[in-house]
Image (cartoon, one colour):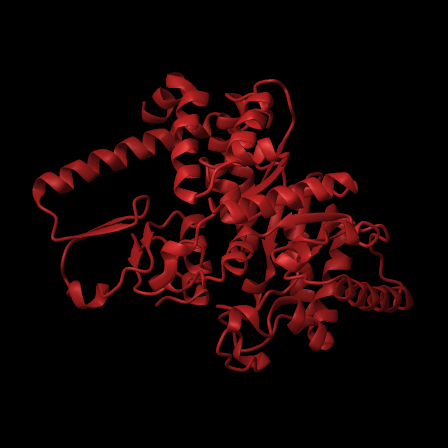
Length: 422
């Protein structure tokens, strides 16, 4: 296995790729590998038994396969694939500055997910419309102590200033699950993804939570900084959060420290309980972001880090799609802007469907942004709405996927494919 904290410190100059026996495509290790542009295959069972030190291997992160001792022809084949991929990336980068809108002129927003402050450069280089998810827990990993208020403030200030005037959505600490900090003494749990993590931990440790909130509020004067809270499951949690936030604001007032008094706050919708009561949040949050990585695992009851049941983790599951559609519709009914920041948001296969559901804000790995802009420019919203209506009638994830694959080819046409493969 490779933990998210270990992945965060990989030296990209020397690490050409990696393979793990544990994990799935939406674990944080896999997410970070994609963000760092490091080819990776996670959840390759018995890989350490089948691969010996010194053997030559090909790591095909796109297909999720590992080839051991490839012959000369196979190496030549993959060298050609690599060259085609590099050409595709170069061509797409030329489009990074086009406006984010569909063929019929519907404006959308394609923002970036980042883990570390320096990644804001990649977001800018790939034409991001803002930062839709800044995962702050990586400031806490791989260190002997906790980050101070000043250190956090400087990190949040850097990102906010560099992106200004574009929005920067910063998620509060989401430890637990597969991300742990020894200094915080988070106990071992049989099922950590459903345990003492994220906002549950923060509400139980206001001493840690308040330091982060102070840093965020201080940084809010430098641009359009917004605060988002993870793993919300009830209205009561948000009310408790706002109570603590008011206390921190009062402390800053006493210290005569400036901050944005009208700062926007949002909730991640990643639990079915929150998804079903979106309308109840209408008076207490300013925006939502759908966290599909957790929402899918909680909806289907499948551990996204368990390679033995990885096949059950399916964004195309009709139940998952119906829940996502409900979140978007309920949010629009009560006037709360909604985005999506999970891995599903950056999957070209689902992009037209999500547009058809009414989603207009996406937050993805920076590397994917130019491609989504290009896809958007080739499709019409009325086409996506018709596509969404047909998907609603389908009974299996397989049926949905096959339908979407055909529709992608139909919607994008040969010009798009020629551009990617030039």
